[in-house]
Amino acid sequence: MIIPKHDLFSEFPQYKDQINRLRTSSSTFSHLADKYHALDDEIHRIEEGAIACDDFYLESLKKKRLYQKDQIVEWINSRSH
Image (cartoon, rainbow, N blue to C red; front, side):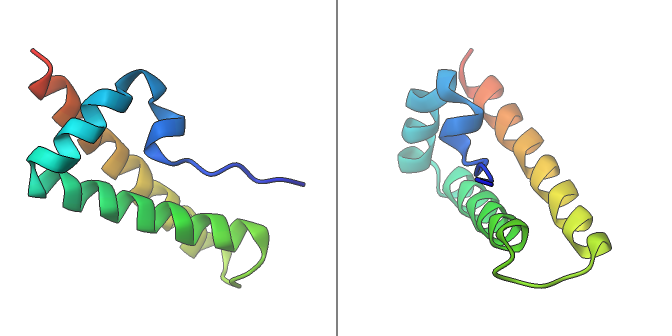
């Protein structure tokens, strides 16, 4: 079974240009995106079985990823007007 990654470009293909622009123009946004990708990578490794953990820990990581995704969308929306 292939487990999909949830990188920002897969999650928000419609914002690809804005994400690239914000990553180069804002160190704060770039740091936020890097943290999101690191969380997504860890979650992906756990789901593939490369890292063992309990369900509670995995769910806590997914909640953090969702929170960071919300912050990223807020950044994109606040800079696109």
